[in-house]
Length: 458
Image 1 (spheres, one colour):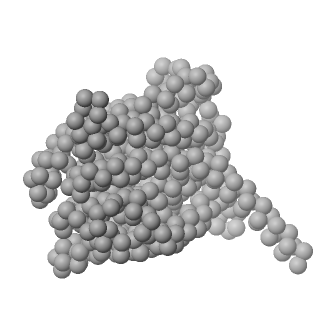
Image 2: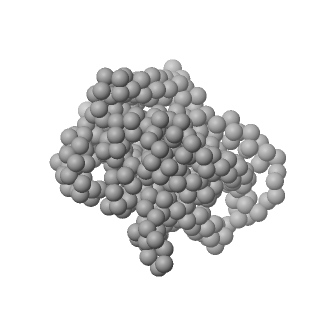
Image 3: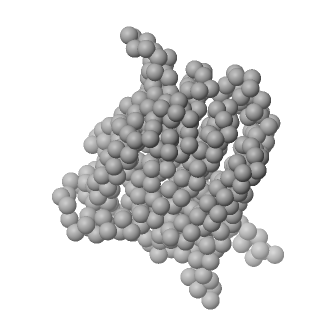
């Protein structure tokens, strides 16, 4: 009995310790990540006050740039995992080479994506959108494209700071960025100071300006508050940097592909919603924004899991890897269930923030109940993905995501919502089913990698 009590006490202590460590990293990371979605949420709300057509243009433009942007973010996330492992093993001086190498990759990919965004209208027409919606969505994409390089450079810098256990600067920069974005939105969306109303395109230009501001703030922080010699930031290109480049591409490319697999599947769902009519795409934009906002909070746990698992891997701590990988999953599960319940209870109040259009409210309100359930598997799969990335196990996750998001979500959504005319409700039902399949698959993969022999149990 005494031994059992002592064992329970030890278990409770390490669980509390791990939760504290996760929250120390996850809270500011979640705030910074959710700040990105809050920025889009504010844009969505403010554009929605213009008209349903403007909201549709903004939503469909965002849906096209997100998969490309997330590929770039997935690529540079590889740098965070490499840097966290080096930091965990005590090789701080080599992490600077990781950051510099990641910067070059971010700049190159960002410029390429920015160029592709300039052809958004043609792509939307090719995808079967109405000419007016394609033209307006194309204007949104053109404006957003100019900010993609800045966004990827900011992401690289922020994730490097997180990997060395300094997540607060990214959070504070995002707080300032959101405040500036609101001010720019009032000017660019609604017009003023000699500028006419720009609508959805104005919101996109505000986002672009803020993305470059975010990068500038983090660069100033590094120059003022980070010991460049300790972290090797002052060194010229070295063998460490070249080796890091190869590792970054081998690790970051499947991470980017993983991001594209998921985000492009959701973009396909957005295009399906666009085929159901302007009201449907506007409703989908609100629901997807809410889903994305909750996802960003889960992404805070995911990033914390990835960084702490990678650090444990760097110091060859197998039990630490297991602990760092599973505790954030349990925390995200509690958060997602709570969020879903609150969303269902306060559905009208939440929806009133986004729109006053009676038709849009009538279309969207019943779907918030479904969204409350979707939040749970979507949040859990996000954290499991971070845990696997911390183990540098990335390709199996891509396969699991293809099966869940494309095999179940997109295929089922098209068949029931478009082919059988089931409407937008069926789209969100299959978003939930796809997330369940991915969550189960990623959990099975993580458990499979935790072999008993690694813990001295066999």
